[in-house]
Length: 99
Image (cartoon, rainbow, N blue to C red; front, side, top):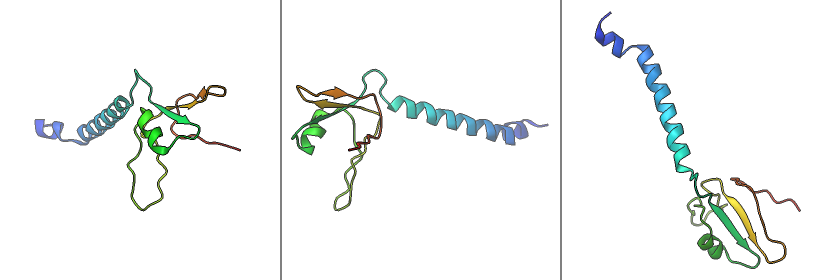
């Protein structure tokens, strides 16, 4: 066995693939802030611009002239600001309201 076949064999390719997957997982995890959870701040009667300004969670980019759902890019807590009925939810990516 030569050195060349050892470095460029199928095992080396498998190791590189595993290493690439682990690197991607670590980078993905580090982009999610761990020390300060992002939050989405909702006020009764507030505008969408106020929601974006007061929230620390980044949202998906807006697509002009298309239906856009404004999905948060990271898990975030939802904080409803109200003197009587205010609440904060655990961190989540999608919030489902059922009436």
